[in-house]
Image 1: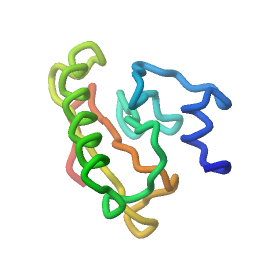
Image 2: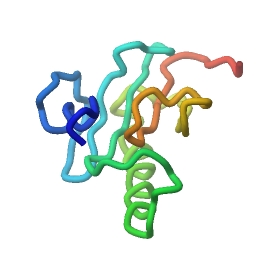
Image 3: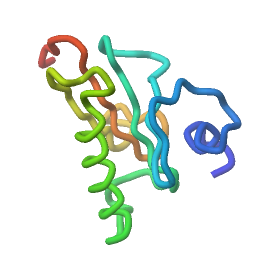
Length: 111
């Protein structure tokens, strides 16, 4: 998607503070953090919503979740973390490229 900020980050057209990258996904620091540690896990394939996930995308989402769990200690999240996936504008999704917010590094209130 030519106007998608996350696609541009994936392509290296926009700089980011990448913490991990492989052939399927990238994890980078959120530019407007809501916690001491606030990362975004973004699939390299563009799709906006969970409802757009076919079997292959569902498997990719599973691998993303597994990778987050594997990397958590090296990301500073050994004490725990929260995952958030906003779906649609009413839920606060501002970039229409599916992504998982990874929040932690401190006790998180439930608001």
